[in-house]
Image (cartoon, rainbow, N blue to C red; front, side, top):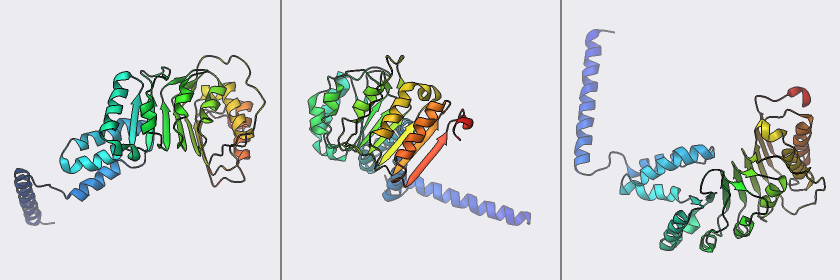
Length: 303
């Protein structure tokens, strides 16, 4: 390629960039947008797409949407529309008063909220039972709830509060600690319209007090989607085996369509048998199964 041709091309490119820069500078001076608003809204929609993981959404997407809502008026409405699909209630008096004041000023926001996240005062603390009734009155129609980074104590009175969310169809237990398997079962059974259950990175606190009861009573609840992810330590605990046995034997999986088992560290015969029981219980209705074992899976016990 001739040097003169390259030189001419670079000169034209530099001239074009200069013109573009000049035009942008004039637009900024006159308050004109550099891109059509609809293009900006499409970018905002992309940022607020379905949550791939809870941490990505809370740490990245949520912060980006907040920044977009403060950038300019043209971006504010679209950003706020997505922001209020996702509401975090932290169990502190100051935060709850702020939530109540916001919902009182803008009652229309209540119908936009699709996911309610309830967090304790600090990571690992128990959820308090002093959440004002006005929050449940306003948000009683929310379809999805996530309990995040908290401890559910045996006999916790938080049950009476959670029962007031009568429209819940999706429950996500995210980094929640339980003392007993019965506590996890109890929380799950609070929501009579539940169709989707996620148990993600939950933990067992302390040691089991006694062998969980082997008696499994049938339940009316029927799940369509089940997602479970757990560590090797969580899976080796007999409380995890009791959970899988309850899921398999209670009838709750008799209509299951989607089953996702992620990063499960199956290291014992008991763990392998309990996971197999869950799959077999839903085999006749499953349309999709996703199983990604953890790196420490012992394949010799899962033949």
